[in-house]
Image (cartoon, rainbow over all chains, first blue to last red; front, side, top):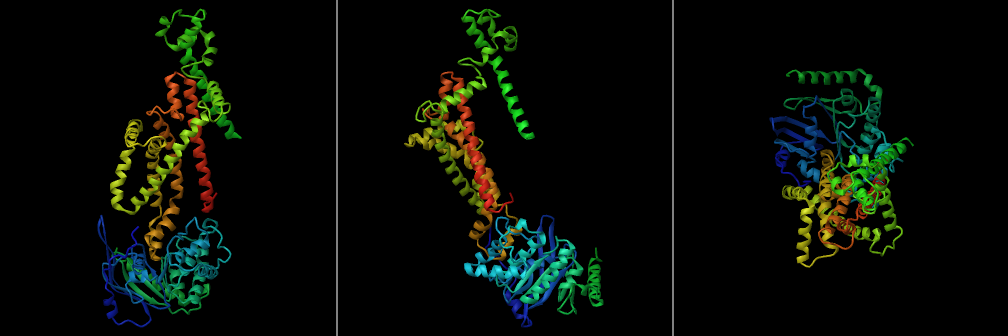
Length: 279
Length: 305
């Protein structure tokens, strides 16, 4: 397994030289990423520029192949852009990764089946060298945060899919990263569970004040959760529209029936349709 | 209950087949014997019987069928003869006796376990190297595969001669042959097991900025456990075969292999078969023991029962 830092094509100076607002945590400028595949080059990201401010809840929405996950992975330094500049907390993504600037939640919970829920949440803490007492404290804290108190001693298979995904969110929250990157975390769950988790996630966001990047292909989910919705379109993956939500921070589930919500959802849908127009 | 009936039916069929096979296998020997004792048989002389088919002889001399199961040195001993020999050489002999199968099994077992330990250790080390180094993957794996294409019966005498010439004898050469056979399944299983974590699992560790060491102990090694146990079960059986084969070319005086060899020198087929069964029972016990350890370990790892 190669965990050495990969060579970075982006220079932090380039990002730093541009004037950015003081509270901007993630900044992408003219980001490009081309994958070399056996079928020739694939243009995954083209000319993506975006600023994410501290405390933002940003959703990335678009059809498959639009590069939303790839962009998230670039922020996490799991992919290396081939052009443009990207800075996370004023550093290159790879420096930010090594500074443990973000927690990442994958589409699947990916809990270790041989560890209990508590031990799973301890995994990053063990790797980062937290003391035993601190580990205990944090596990209890985040279990409470995702409403899983009392389930620490259970093994993953004893929990439902939704509970497993909450445990994986708890794992990403356990250490002090102020950015939370989530790649379709609720994609595999049914609608009722998803609604509940969306509500919980908003509360959690309000309590922790984290900056959240959230990939989804559900329009209601994106509108309900976000302060900023990034609509992307495919081939090549690019940003089609950025919508700043006018919804209040306090959002009960029935806000989804309000005219304001429907209007934003409509604009997202229009954006997605227009983005699809060229194929 | 239903499955018990099925199992017993299969067992009964095997034993019935075995008894049936004893009749044509042993008929010529029986007829020679009774002819010498003055009983009239058809055809009358051994010379005439030599080229006759066994089934025909049985049909012509049905009176001799019973005797085919109680010969002293049959070509194929009957099941009860093997069972009696097993009983006499395990339960009724003192363990220290040279004729006790327990004594011989214990000699072979110690070489098996030593070889298994060496083979497993070597196999795990090679697998760790192969998974972490592309160079090792390309340079070691082909040789590991080639090593298993050489018949062990051809290689065993050479290993023993080479080791003897540098002054190594006794249990070690047998253990080396054992290890030679058992390292391979462990390498293959462990490489597969250590590579079992998917890309997402590896990405997750990367987001924690975990190093290779942490990745190994926290993810790769625990993921490989089910694969390791599957390999160990194959490995221990191979180890036992290796130890027995290692006893054959040395003219060893102790061990199940020696017992097989002595039996074939003196035409003691009952002894050969009981040694074979002792080896099979030993192998089954070792595999069962590993299965038990596997169950305990995987249970403690929280695997669903």
